Figure 1 (spheres, rainbow, N blue to C red):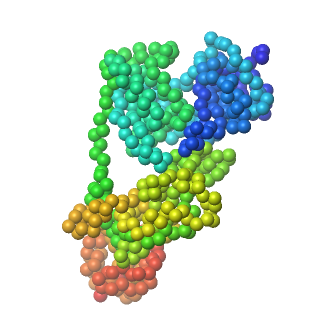
Figure 2: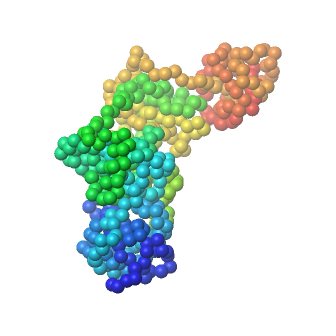
Figure 3: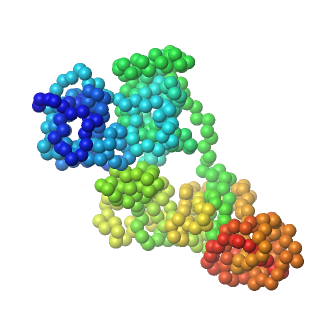
Length: 522
């Protein structure tokens, strides 16, 4: 295949006769999250003599044809591609377009000393920070390894996953990188050599994320690759620059000490959040987390018990050859089924619906949603899995989230952020002697119907008898000594009168915004 060859920067759609002379800077398989041994495509980065970079892919039906021809780092002459727009999250290059091999694509091995074999597009700490934790593009980052954390195990994609954290530095600052799975062994094996020198690392194709307010780097399944003390000119220049930047590299890698205290499950459910009954939960105006105790009486079979979610665990919808995530505002291509289970819960006085999600369902069933679905024929019309009966009769504590608009997210169901069924903690919740949760509500309105009087932000206890007129609502001022109502506050109105003790009525509420208030002294 003779020249001349095209430059990657000139590639655009509408033509398929592009001829390239390029090394494969990175080569990896795309696999399902839960089945890493069955690839559905091959992806690669091609680099030309001008440093141009473009992502190319081979779809499943052509993988066998090209699989044995391609080697990472080798140089090839290539011709004939399908050119498409470069869309979606985790884009490996910033080129506007990407390539796909088709049945006419030709690949011939060759040699060239003039083209860089890996063609890194190196970013620095400031480049990462400027993304503000959100980027559709994967990054190549080079830094000196200052310290590492101890290995931890976290729940990820419904399974326990190992993770290790690196602290890296360059001339622009410091940043942390979380590495999962097999990368933990790569790091620990390198450090076990005991070299008395800080290594230079290139993390190829890392994604940018945000964790607890900090911007971090993370590996991407199959795509990310680590280079330790790479013998390339960029690494030599970087090392010289670091040495002159007040970083002593002739020391051993340090340890990241975890000084953050993790709240225990007992503290979380008995000490940290206000405890409420279901009846009280229905009248809460203040946004926040609350703990409710109850027994699961029924698993509702209304609607689906699963949804398709991306890595952010939010629901996605099929769109544009992938899946659209409204939370991330982007197209994603890696999704997995996750649980969403509607439970009817009774606290001994009232019942309510509680929606629990993937992590909590998995903790009870000890089987992932994907594995449970694999043995079922009709996921939409068939009966609910027998495994869900395990929830029946369970006495649990529910950490419930109340949003500021006083409405539940899933119809009439409360959103559960975390579930606790540990027996000693559940019993501790019932023991009045162990109650240590903070007091709550700032205002619990014992109203029957919203009335009008001059708008005021003064405490209701300051309202005089002269200010009171005729009203259909009977409310004792003594019940409101600690309360303050402001014009514009959102309150609830009910159609029946409450008693003098301020007991909440047992009928549905209606939302309305207060413009002014009228009261009658009883």
